[in-house]
Image 1 (spheres, rainbow, N blue to C red):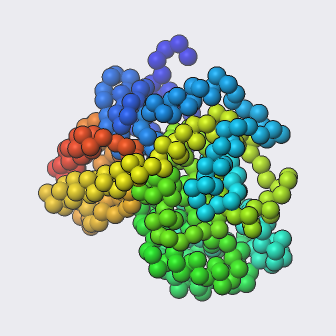
Image 2 (cartoon, rainbow, N blue to C red; image 1 turned 90 degrees about the vertical axis):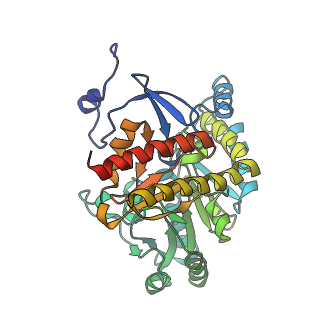
Image 3 (cartoon, rainbow, N blue to C red; image 1 turned 135 degrees about the vertical axis):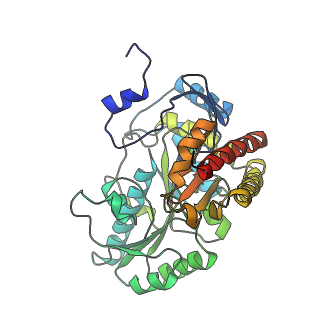
Length: 404
């Protein structure tokens, strides 16, 4: 295409499963972006919790370019040094003994669910196949993960969903207890529901899930695709709670913007995924692994992780100040650099209306459902960008309130 692409080209050439904003960013640096017209934006969206170090961070650029001049892809008939280094880094920093590398969060969750079913089949027999997850959860867009996810709108219209999947209320331990049995092979949970509205799990809930899984010889799977790799203020959110899962999935921030995913588990469970049981063509490719290793090593430092918690407090202070003036939020919640502001009753269901107003003011943000404004910026966003971004958000909120 010789001419400069426009937003209209999306409607002409792309499958209509997205509805992107009118602005087309063409360049990014840190937590700022510029569109085709040169207009500047502050990025509170972070590629939906992906751009953990902002745009074009030199550590990631260096890792990418260095590896790009060496080796990109081999497929899994061979291994490669960056993949082995990444796996070792994840094992040394977490509860895990073994790692499966793939290309996305959906792939990581698909692998975790297949592992759980295969482990239960091997260890206990074919009757132990039930998976419990939670309403309003989100685990990916493959047919298995979208079925386990607790939002029917994502699976409706695609035919019969896989069987053996049950849904309980999030943060309701008794609801889980009623569904648990000897036929339960796994419980899958987000330590903080992302798409479901930025709702953190309670301490008692996650501790209770761990105890129930132990009681019924089921696996506890933590979906940390959105909360992982520093997003919570710890490398993984399970560390914040002190509750250790049997399987953990990671993506998004893991690559800092480069597509990569991982499933982590223990020596006791990993053998169920024997040769030929699962795979990923691009999983563990050298290019993605080199970038992910650089991201993990940079993020898993006291300076970055403590900075995440400090920035959380700044975001909360600014959001509360905006709310004192305009009264648009009912509750502000979240962990680290994943925050949600639930709309007040007067503005119920209108979170989406803030996004185009924010774009006009030079701010990129997100929603988590129709009623929660979501922010998932860079973990190292400068304080000056937080202040300026919040000033722009305040102008957008003022326009919402004024009906402009």
